[in-house]
Length: 434
Ligand code: AMP
Image (cartoon, rainbow, N blue to C red; front, top):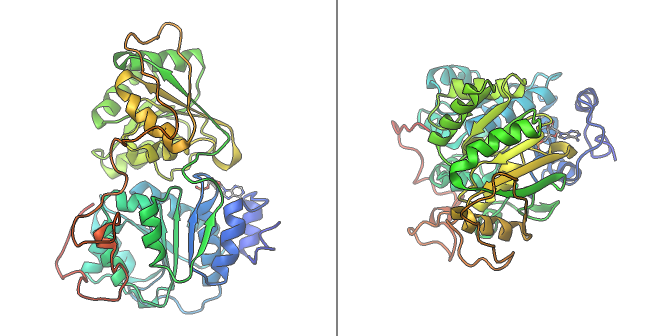
């Protein structure tokens, strides 16, 4: 099966050959023809399986050969993503795939000055990648004209809701033309959100290429039980003992991220921390340095968990388990991408047993435990009861708004999400940073 057989044409096929994309991935095989046919799509795919190209390529093909440039503030394709890093990454992919075309892509996200974005958008743009908060800012300032919009993509849709973007999404969708193609992509879908989102799409093609909430099978995952206070020592030991070359480390708090990075730096290990308190420029610089290999250990809070694609990353370490089990799948999805092998190791202390149980329940399998000699915990990590046995999740993954009353288990502010009511358009002067 080739990309041409899926319906993609020149110059995209030549670009893909130059990128050494030989065959479409499963999500691409299913999504590309459906999107080319103009269908709405709701797709669940494992992280790292090529879902960005699955939506970008057919949308780009639709734009190729369009003579009219979008007018002032015009946008043809809008891609909504939950984080700034993902916005940059999707924009870069878009520029790469569209390199030999005249299609212009741009990313607009919060945490950086609005002025240059306003200036750039005046000229219009073919593909705009945006975080919801910043997009609402731009709409409020009437910097965008969305009447020419032909397609909207929600990438990591469940995470956008999780991060509290439901209200922004309501505003955004009310500003979109009713005649449009809507694509919803995510690695994980809470059932309630899935059901409701489906009602926003027109007769969607439902694509599920792999079991929900599972990580790539190429990732070897296991748990090292360890006392909380010894996690730092264990990391240093394993770094040296296993001769790790590059590791993405996930921690729970910004403080831990800074402390661990500082400790590693004091041992002459090139380490950086990224988290929400660091200015956007330094977050991107740290990520860039990790990508080019000059930084060997990147210590991150979950801000970095979604969507980031780092070539050939061999190792992910969960220094702390995530509070939400779904984040585990996203975290370990940073390795084992595009069919490569990877390892995901979780340092688990006794307090984290409920979190471990939630992860195992989500994965529907127990994770093997492998104590590291010399680091056996004095506080034993209690056995988890096994998949299916977890009755209490540490925190809900989808915040259910109390008002307005939605359907049972459905965020109220998703009701009438795209009903065409204009009453909740952004009022002039509303401004919020993200
Ligand atoms: P994504 O899941 O979209 O983040 O993609 C994961 C990685 O797979 C990225 O590095 C892409 O460049 C790469 N990729 C996507 N599609 C293909 C393909 N058909 N063949 C080879 N690599 C691909």
